[in-house]
Length: 121
Image 1 (cartoon, helix red, strand yellow):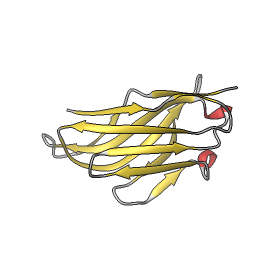
Image 2: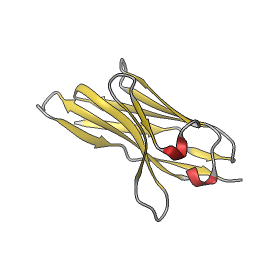
Image 3: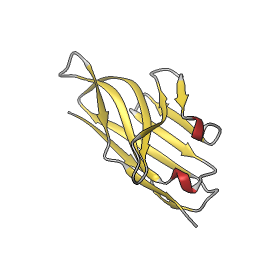
Image 4: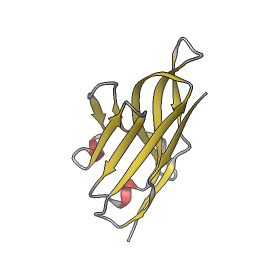
């Protein structure tokens, strides 16, 4: 089994910053890509940013220049530094990872349960 657990969400004023963390744990053999998605009320889940096993990243246009993803492969962590937050960034943020478990021969996608980010004055 593989688990992803997010932390770091909360309430922040417009223009403020938050840092989200995601820890992958369990029977992990290898992790390929990791990333963050978000879902605002009444909207579909959307990509925020993904990072592959190296340093290649893909950001949504709406967060470019404001959000930064980083990854620590040694402890299976991924982070999202969010700066200059806007009310439209309000959403549940989900961590995702493409993982090969020790009991599996294939890579599969996994999701965390999400952490709520609210940007409001």
